[in-house]
Image (tube, rainbow, N blue to C red; front, side, top):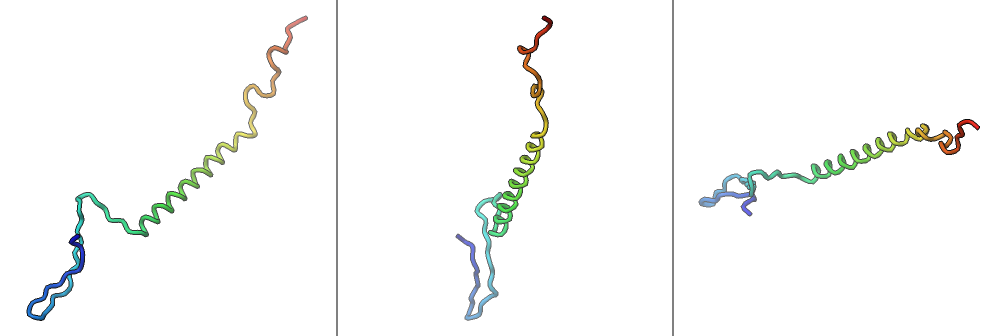
Length: 81
């Protein structure tokens, strides 16, 4: 792993330190811990928001009657005598 802090020494004199970052692949993205925790927290909040939204939308249908509810069954209806 070539990453690290390097200095050059010549005749007892040292150059200023040089920090080297090296990525192993072209498409790699370095993500630190705060970024990962932010993504996880945002995902949890979005999931809770979606669950509450689905609960609220499906909970509104409780007061409505379905099409067949409240009607007499067809077999019980008599036509004429």
